[in-house]
Image 1 (cartoon, rainbow, N blue to C red):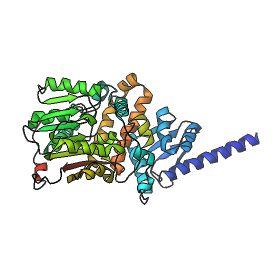
Image 2: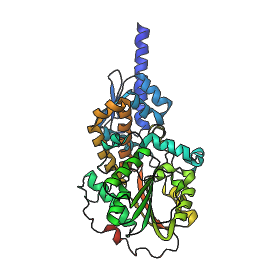
Image 3: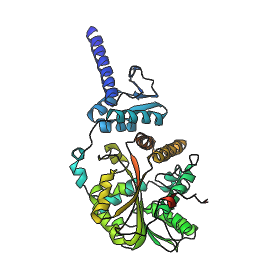
Image 4: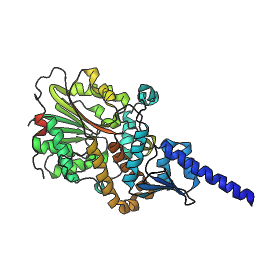
Length: 411
């Protein structure tokens, strides 16, 4: 009996030591951790915004075995519960990690060489797109805006709704490209087609839009037909590498993250072939302030083949072909709010989504959306818009004023 009691006490002390170690490794966030025994531990002097509950010792083993995967795996499997506001907890943990890593040097030597040379082939790209974007249009309709825009919104007016902010983003892109009636525009990675249709309807251009997702292309074609835009917008279910049309403007909104670092030079060469000497292009992409590999849990379950580039990595698209960079804007706070709004909408439909996809799926997507918002809020993630033109093009706007004219009202 004494032996059993002593062993229990030893295990109890070890469990508590492990919890303190976890908190320290995470930068001592203002959260508490509750063990399966009911003991709750937090950093001395902290005011926890929420609690992580370990349902069993197995959760400890998952975290010890792989800290980079463990948290996501434990939550996905139900070994870990979050009590309190989920987004507030995600923000606190992410902010603490950022504070802890503030003085760490992120140079090229920390980048995985294997990741840098990994190529997303056409077949692999098709698989990656199918994994994420062909989950069903009905799923995305539950929590995106009415135009089904699955990229960063632009809250030009701080009081704007998500629907209004997504339209503002579409128009912000169009204004940056300085679109003129009669021009031809390529939209590479067009999603459900909102930008292509907005360009054609409100700026009088002809758009050729490319995407690998069958479900997204079918939806976009239906919407274009309903809006009577079929003669001005062509949606093609093709890889971006198959683009061979000359254009006056090139837009890629949220595709670069899926291209793969090793393919950036190929993308730049394609744009160089297609974009006329007096044309303008814009690439909009999630990024980082430093070079780093993608989160392994996100890569495994949410975005296989994904990579969030630093600005220096993005320059691999432009520098080999001597493109002139006209403007770089970072919309990071806007994406934090966008993801937070998506999460709110997602939670409102969580019961319905669980019925269709199961509890584990809901837990994965809740963690992905909250983690993404926290990443942008903390500065771990960035959102870059890079405006560029072929070298020697002097027919570009003299100032940036044209980008910030009062928005029209779009219905």
